[in-house]
Length: 366
Image (cartoon, rainbow, N blue to C red; front, side):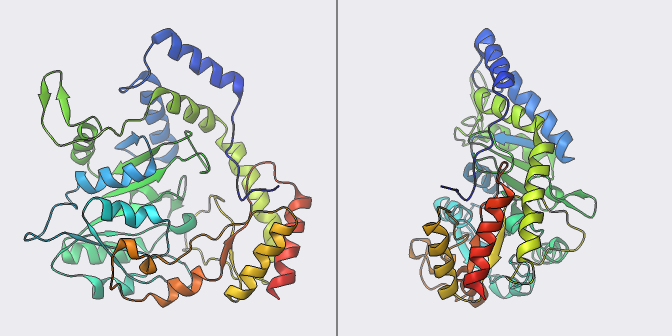
């Protein structure tokens, strides 16, 4: 069976060396030396400052909301955040879980990211933030979003779970917004087994978040803020350090998979239009077919030959009732969600298998 992705497992010998050190120090969590090393190395690798490692990508979003005050009520009513309906459920459910009402604005049908032209109409007196998503690592229109945020004094928190290593105009895409969050789940391009990170624009927000992820504790006998346990541990950091050592090879492997798919599929399926001046990290290989019927047939055909493709993202979130009721319809997001599938991509996927997968998609899609 060919899955849609596989966790990348780094050198076992190197991982064992890190684990030996953990046993020698008997230091498993609470800002250990491996976590500190991974923080420094990721800041250097990504070209960012003010990076905070946390235990998963969903908590990264929630800590960012709290550190930036997005969760605070407005005139006794829940605050609101404008976001995209075309994303993984955690983007919106993390808002709802923290008492923030998600308000959906439709996507750009070419880039598949939140369309800035739809944001202003969704702003109300209760809006505190915009939470766009760099979908499949494709940069949002960050300049246009920044103009709107400044006009209405809104915070911007980018869900950058897919955007590890992506550069925009020669610099890290993670530098945009008041904060950008990353997921280091096992299936991500870079992973720590489970884990995540937040990149803050301002150091003071980073310092507040550091306290928040450790129960609000600021000293042996001092608790100065409301907090939670969101710390990354040393075993997660060890995995991250090993994977980071092999990122060049991971990137090369995935680029080769992407190029092989492209040689067989470009012009025969709809591909995401990438934002100009943006690098691509090959984290996913999404394609959109003409309609839901063709998508269903393609997935069934692939399944019959042992290939598990996946619908990313389905359903369009404005239709998910547990997030709220009465959401405005988002036709572009709903249309795309009915037609899109992510094809398998991971290190070690053979050219023969890629060709077979592409041929099945072409047979159904035409």
